[in-house]
Length: 204
Length: 154
Image (cartoon, rainbow over all chains, first blue to last red; front, side, top):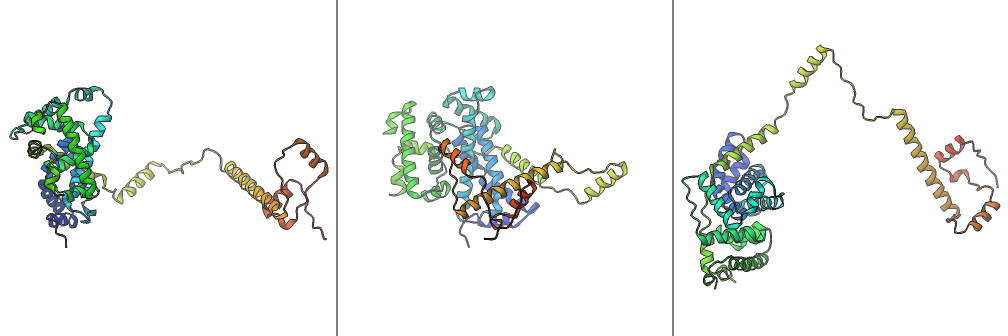
């Protein structure tokens, strides 16, 4: 018997079909939608890509939940799919030819992109207040520009508050690798923030 | 090394900012998009009812349309068969030649000198091959080319 807190709901999804599955999956969706969207937003750096990646994540979960065997925590599995989807979307955006709308998005710098994403999110959901401080904008722009694996590990560790063990499950690596990656991610973030005028007294 | 020691490598202010960035809510479009995709998935897995063929078949019969076999090869079957036969005979002949050479110990190395080659041709009128050294296919091919096969008692 697994001690996974999501086990009962996941097993309901696995053992049901039709309307019963829809109902169970809707509950699972409600449980994870914000975490998935937030992770995708922080890794991709903008609302449109985050929505694409989050949608891809939730569809993959619905399609593959029947085969989930509890070899890891269910939440780790979800985060793994979310991070991979976000990385895929961000890679596609970076690889896309700079024409049309892509040119417009690609031409703005990180701060503008963050502000644009924030505006889009606020427009899409009026009751949702996205209060991004100047420092948060700088951090988001740094996340958007840094190595994808480093950005993902910082988001998982600090924004999503995952333990090292959970991160090792999500990224499919050892604890030692998690610590090593996290160290390098810290260094990368520091350097990017310093180069972008983040208050240096706060970095010491 | 504990989690707190590891995370202390980032300044507390930056950690606090990162932690405060986890409060985004998913927009309602997310559920709409996922739901639409899952509905499309279900549509894609629908199978045609078994009655479909009966209906279509009856309709075609009524209109006098008959099904014709699809032509897979553009060449006539006889050409394809002839080509296949030639390939089989060629392979059989070659393997037979190789095995008979190996069995008799006769090694025909590539001519390294035109003089040696001319010398060989001037001395050797034919190479005798024992019937038991030939494959049936080789014997058939030799016969079809006008060759004679005779048993020699020694």
